[in-house]
Length: 179
Ligand code: SF4
Ligand code: SF4
Image 1 (spheres, rainbow, N blue to C red):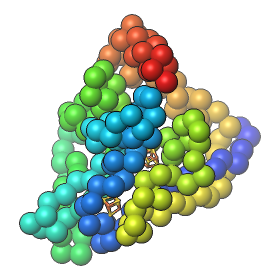
Image 2 (cartoon, rainbow, N blue to C red):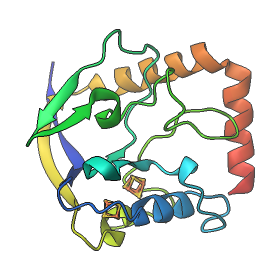
Image 3 (tube, protein in one colour):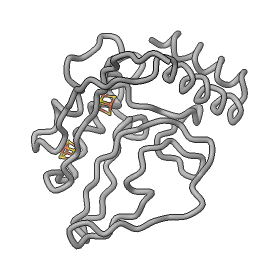
């Protein structure tokens, strides 16, 4: 199987620099509102800040792939003397929690690195984080040519299995009308 170069875009998160201001949630939900900048509901944001001020924990997490199955166990991570529970660090839109689900339809949300129309040169959450807790990184990797298509098909099948084809079609139609 031939290999192709793929550009990997990611956001490096420094939890020690995050102060829980939630500016990243505000700008993400505003940029993805329909019409754009018409609202800023954090429930629609593709980045969420898990916080526990009493333990000085602030963990920004951006939304990854939808997953059809929830984990069977829950790990606890001890990092620099602070305990983090696995769900708080997880970026999956998962069936066992409401996080990263569009409030109206329940459909999963996923970070698009602000490449929605018009695409941004640098993710807006990164630009709005004045504490430099979010750092945008771009690198090249070699991958099998058809991996991406398989991933998309599997993700789409899981979403249709869970929500039904008609609901997905209706939501996409509604969202494109608003835009
Ligand atoms: S904008 Fe930066 S400092 Fe504020 S909550 Fe988001 S990641 Fe944390
Ligand atoms: S990169 Fe853009 S879409 Fe992703 S979490 Fe940040 S603001 Fe939201």
